[in-house]
Amino acid sequence: MKNIAIIGSSGGNLYSLGGKSPHKLLQEIKLQSDAAGFQITAMQFIAADASMDALNDTAQASLFTSDPNGQAVQSESGPLKTINEIAKIKDQEIGTMILEGQIDGLVVMSADPDDVNKQSVAAAVEKRIPIVGTGGTSMSKISTKGAYIIAKSGTTGTTNRTRAISFIGSLANYWHVNYKAMIGSNMEDNSQPTENIWRNINIRGIMISALPGFIAMAIVLALSKIPAFSGLQDVFDLMIQALPVIVSVIAAKQVSNLDEVSIVAGVVAGVLAVDGGIIGGIIGGIVAGILVHYFFTKCIKWRFPVTTVNIAAGGLAGLIAGLLVFYLFAPIALWIGDGIKDTIEIAIAFNPIIAGLIGGLLIWPAILGGVYHAAILPIVLLEMERTGASFLGAIDMVGLVLVSAGINLATIISTKDKGEAAAATPGFLINMGFGTFVEAAYPFMFSNKLVFAGAIFSAGAGGALVGLFDVRGTAYVPTFTAPFLTNNSIGFVIAMATSFGLSFVITIIANKMKKK
Image: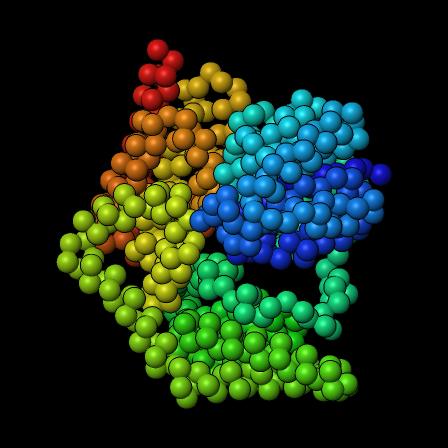
């Protein structure tokens, strides 16, 4: 039996994607660990009552540790500053256990390797035990310390279940252990939901989870431009109509946490909310999720047969929510969505170069300040709802992904520090191969002011070219495919090459100056 430890926190973006429900997040890992025959020997997980992107030391938090059976238990609660100090003691214990050979692998989620998780990470580096985890910033920092990371990623687009399966699956493959992921309704008892339903409403989480649907639509649009696949234009038009259904299902499921019942309610509400666009779909899904929760608990309390419970909770909740949007909210939702998109178009029409320049210059401060996932990404999806591509989406690819790739490649080539080169390599490959994980550039930007300034300058220059060529595009796809998912392939390639080249050259210069 392999022994593993879990360290980290509810994080920033992670909070919106499962971190706000630490018991469920940790239970998912426990379930998958049991399926693989692993034992959770130690745990140090800090759960805050809000996203850590905007927290201070007075915010409330809880410390979760494990009992002898590996189950998560809330051992302490109080101000974040106090919990951090208590967590350091647990960190020392885990570090000692690693050094003594009592822990074989480490699961990391939005950890702080420079402070609260310093000892355990240092011990893991020394003993060279395998590490898996998520959290762009923390995993990049851990990489630079020479840790033996076998699987890492950012949190965008993940769920508690997919993260847990990824963690345990990677460790199982590494140790050559037979593992069958636990997936199904038998994983948890949803018959008596007790969470505060209103806390589950999170627009950012809904939009991020819907991203694959928008990317699929962009791919269909690109293929429809090829003469042999011109018939796919009808498919594209149909997919635009399907987007409200997608976001409605996600909203209903996230709000109610009742799996299949909430999915049915979300579909019914989404179909009736099509005329309200994706904002109408979100409204319908949220209302459906709330009603599902209410009807489900009431029907259970009234001892209805389970079949009747599902019909009442799923069917009636979706129907009522959908009719409310159809007759009342759809015009308002459509007006709001069109207003946001029209505002962007007005700014671009006024001066596209300045609009692109400003967008590029602000894109890094936005993601560093926690604004990107809360505001920019939802706007990107609203833009894509109309045309299948986005002005801000193109700036995302040019100003974040390509700039990060340039910094990482320059670091690989020009640094003599093997730790930095090792950390930059997977970041560059993910940037180029998947169009994401821009956090990989953070360690190099934070350690060198010239690299940081160069990243912002390169993003601004690339954004200006996006405006000059009136480019619409998207990120979160393999970088080499991005020019095919745009309205102006040549202009997009020029903008991408410019931001990549500038960040690469500036980082090379910065590294040479650092050596001198």
